Length: 334
Image (cartoon, rainbow, N blue to C red; front, side, top):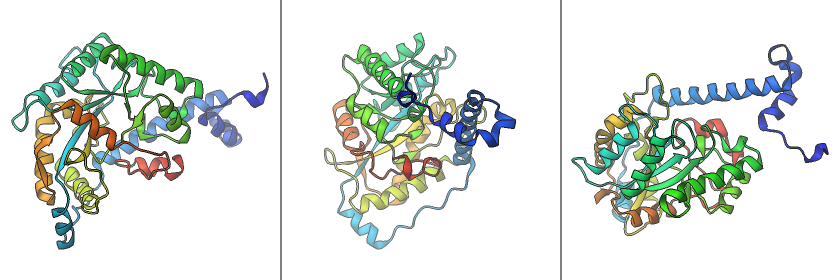
């Protein structure tokens, strides 16, 4: 085969470049690629740990000028999203607990959210339990968006063009088999996309939805609690408040959708979701943000319009990613 027609993965390219230096440790290029993948996982876990335990700055002070600008803006409404599920656990399933809390809580019953699902992961949607939960999510009026249809939580930028096309095709078909139509929303694993993957999403009718607020709960193994969850949301919402005051966020159906991200595989999040809902409302009041009478979306059609309005229009559009992800990927990823 003509060597010009063969494609190598980013890990292979790095290994080819650094193999002379890494040879004593890595051995062959193939072995080096394995090491690079392991290193990537370590870096990702380190980033999540930093997000969980790192210092959280104090909220941005509310100035009279900002307060005046907020009076001229419509109220906000929280648009809840959940990543990585559904859980395949047969024991105290966290995704099922999240769905229970959204349906019945003391703040607002029948809240609707967007679930970015892994349709073929054995610990998620690739299991019988996972497929049943995706069916329940749809039946209860939530939106199913695609996270990935690979066998694991794979970075789409590390897939070959053929592999990416395959996973997007599988994912759309998997969700369409449940909802009757293919999804229109996608959230790339690890928040990572570039011009190539973004163009592939567009070809499949998928729109990238990022986030404004994050619970930083992507770490699901070991210690997965969020002891500073209130301070975290308060700081992040004070930053979003400044964007609201400047009129940077779109208005949809008379309110400004503010996207919030959780991970429904996280058992701590599942147990404390009702508390998180209260924290969001408290943070809005504490930061001076005008909150709509209905703080959360409870209508499927309104949720769909709001989510679509918040999607990324162009791959070169500046993106503020949660936690350490901006630092990890850098601006050149887009």
